[in-house]
Image (cartoon, rainbow, N blue to C red; front, side, top):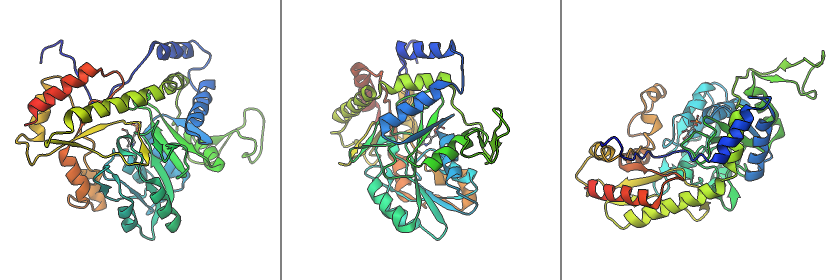
Length: 385
Ligand SMILES: Cc1ncc(COP(=O)(O)O)c(C=O)c1O
């Protein structure tokens, strides 16, 4: 590959001068961490999503871990998630010594299919973690109906879906769930470097999450058993250091101001890919449901290997030589060697496995130009044969 060739990954941050300036200002301030910007970022997230409370944390994985702890998932409890997700959506159950269960996807959206959730419910099931894959919300009304019927908790893994709507409600509002988690990794729609958040409308969960984020400690006078003085704190739970810094919160505040702009750009890019590649028997795309207005995090291209002679491996190597480094979302979690320990094997969730074989995520990020997209689609048309 020529050294000066432009390279494309599947995701990339968009950093403005305003982002840089606000971070520099935070660095010159009194606090680098645990200062006023953490609460300001939380307020901004509540305002944007409509949820009552936000707890920002070190990353999306910590957000899921603390969600399991605050909902008191215990050894042998079962929690159902999608096989078509990043490892963290299932690993968080293992952190709490629970058992991850999977329910297969709807192939049209690659999201967990509510019909399959019900089949996985047992006496031990405590919660469901729907993952809003690629940014499109799961069918939350159907999932909430199931949760009510069986008295289950819902944690929306919205690592992909800040900015998305479900039935005209913002993902993160927790209208259909107990908790919603976000990730602010640089490949996501808004970034804080590393970072995440947990949203909720439940004050008790919120106050416990604040403790879990910081060693299980509290100074809240209403929660203390006694008070020896200004310095006094109590550790009431086993918590962690899962805090986000003021420097990161500054970047989050600034990025959130541009989210609507990011969303419309991302939607336009997906539309352009669909127009340029959609009318071709070699390719297809996921469908967006009528209830969804997604802020797309990913644009999976589905390749019809029935008519294409090359293998996925060959296609990836050839595209790389043109500077295009695609990714695959996702290797079904139940097929990972670790999850053999839980008795899972290839063949258990065939729709996710089929989906994995044909999917490849196209570059999708705000700073891509129309010229970039034309180049990428032309190379794909030439190579995928
Ligand atoms: C669906 C999903 N859940 C959780 C996470 C974990 O987020 P983080 O990388 O911020 O820990 C990711 C990250 O890629 C994700 O894609």
